[in-house]
Image 1 (cartoon, rainbow, N blue to C red):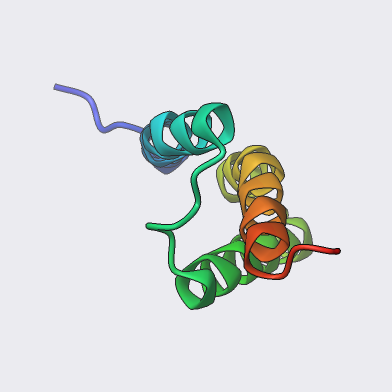
Image 2 (image 1 turned 180 degrees about the vertical axis):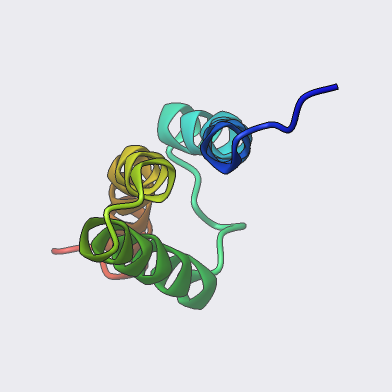
Amino acid sequence: MFPMPAEVVGYAAASLTTISFFPQAVKTLRSGDTRSISLGMYALFTSGVMLWSIYGVMVADGPVLIANLITLIPAAVVLQRKITAKHPSS
């Protein structure tokens, strides 16, 4: 048996964690219901994903960068919807 390169493991892990996020994001975007989403948790999560993206650039880590950039887009959209629902403009 041959050793698996760390980058392959990184891309596999990045793919699974990124893909796992999408069903909840799609459900939230389709329904528009953000009541069950914690604003604090989602703000922290989205900030963390953004920082992981920056880290990926800084250390030139492809799996970290790609996974977090892909996750950042729907995370930011859901966070924006949560903030809008929490503070509707009249």
